[in-house]
Every structure is written in C-alpha cells, then in structure tokens.
Image (cartoon, rainbow, N blue to C red):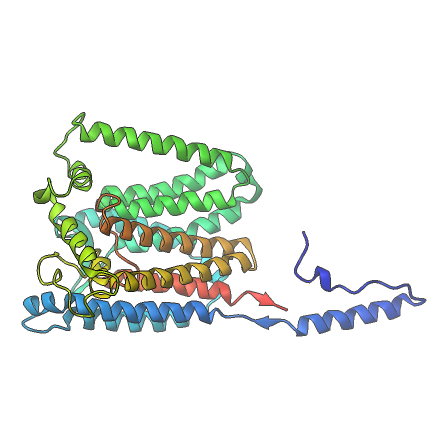
Length: 406
C-alpha cells in the first residue's frame, strides 16, 4: 500500500557507483525523517475546554433554584461539585494524554472484566435513586458502573479486533467481538436497568465491527430487518398484545401522546417542549428560564438542552450543536490519520459514543424518541459522566500524539 512519502521518493538515476547512490539515498532518508514533526490535537483540547465551561455556566443557570431548595440556600451546590470534578478530570486527561495508548491497551481486558463485575454487583449493593439502582456509593462518593462499561468497550473491542486480524473476514471472529460487546450491553440492562447505556454500548459494538469488516451488505440487511422487527414489536406492545402496564410500554405511550399520558411521565416531556417553544430565536436571556423553577423536574440532568433553548433560543442551541460537530470532526480527523488500526478504532469508538449520546439526548428532549435518561455530554450534571468522558478525550489525544506529518 502506498504511503504518504511515496510521492517524495527521488527518481533513481543511473550511476557508475552503487555505493555513491546508496549514500545519497541514506542522506535523503535522514533529511525526510528530520522533517517529521510531532502532532497534538490542540483543537480537540480547546473544544473540550469550551464545552466544559459552557456546560458549567448552563448548569449553574439551570440548577441554582433547585440547589437553593435542597442545600439550605446554597445556589452553587451543583455547580461547585461539577466544577471541582471537571477541573480535576481535565488535569488528569492532560496527564493521561501523554501516555502511549499502546501501553493502555495492555490493560483493556482487565478493565473490561472489572466493568462487568461492577455492573453485576450494582444489582446487590447499589443504592436506588429515583426508582433505579444504578449507583454504587463509597461513603459520600457515588459511582455509576455503566460509565466505566462504555470506556471499557471503547478500549477493549479495538484490541480484540486487531488481534483477530484477517479472521474478521469470516463469521466466527465477528461473532466473538459481538459477543463481548453484547455481554456488556446485556449486563448493563439486566443488572442496572439502564437501557439507554445498553443501547449505546451495543451501537459502539456494531459500528466498530462494521468499520473493521470488509463487507457492508450483511450490516445493511441486518439493519433493515432489525428496524422492521422493532417497529412490529412496538406496535404489538402499544396495542396491548403484551403487558401494557410495563414501565417501558408506558414510555412508548408517553412518546406517542405525552398530553394524554401526563401522569405517566408526559408532564416532563411537555414542559421540555414548552421551554423549547418559548425560547424563540435568541431566547429569554441567560438565567431567565421559567421552566427550571420547579416546572421541569431535574432540568440539570438529561433535560438541560431544553433550558438552553429557552434561555439562548435556537441561536444558542445551534451553537451547542456546532461545538459537538467540531468535536466529532476532530475525532474523525484523528481516526483517519492514526498511525495504526488500533488507534483508528479507539478514536472511532469515542466518535460513535459522543455522536450517539448527543443525538439521542436531543431526540429525547424534542420528543422524537421515547425518554431514555441519556445525558448531554460535558453539559448535563454528573460527576461520573464527566470523569469518564475526560478519560475518553485523554485516549483520543494520546492517539493524536502518535500522528506524524512531513
């Protein structure tokens, strides 16, 4: 396969002395190597810092009222916690980006099995919050194992795919990769009842195998069949073919008609839509949201995008989306220019995770899909989320350091 420097090779001229030609080639090689320069994606780092700062501003604006009610008048309670974790995580990410990702890949399998272990024990020792047992508490510190599971998949599956090599052309090797990915997704759903994260893990698995696999047709066929089956199942469930009182079925009914099912969760969806609609093009102004004053429950979490739309309008929402587009573009750039398949797949896995989470969060807030509890990366409140997102950025920056340009 042609390399970047192929077109730079000098034309070989006939010479009376092979020794002289060899010496010239050696001097040329030394000259080309000397022009190589290290690369570090400062653009990605800048957009991470920008999104984090924007997220902190919006978090304070969104959570100040609720924090005053919960923390004895301390309106900076949520902001302070998130700011401390964000700054600490960013510093750790800068340090982690200096570590060669090939070295980190050696620990991919232990991290994967540790994540599975945490998911399993959450069922037994996890603390229930808002009806879901998804957190493990170590004194005052809470930890959500599902976030570790996403990072583990992003690191472990590329290592596994690289080891499989040409075996991926068959069916056995892809099945093994799918098996590890779906095991993590299954444990996430079964032991933590976190369907949204399970969907993201499954999505990362499918797309990484799709990228590494030489054939496209099987994936297109599987996607079409899966879409038809999902549509049929949803129709049967909604029409009462199975237990219509299921929590998941209630969410589908709320999605189809939130106003008619306000008591089942449609109230939050309607308030989010009211917030988006009332913002107009430029919004009501930072801090002037009315829906965050108790009308929209826990707006600082997965519904924070609706407050952005209310306070900053369509203009602010578009700016946020453009920041994520810029982040995804830098991740795509790193994946395209990574020095090897391992680095390319790691960057691709991070790209898929961020893209899925942003798209699904905005789709939920605008009621395009049923509510799933997916947070908006770097913006929504959550210490565990920001910590592992920064770990992913450290991995991406580590891959970028291995890129060489001439």
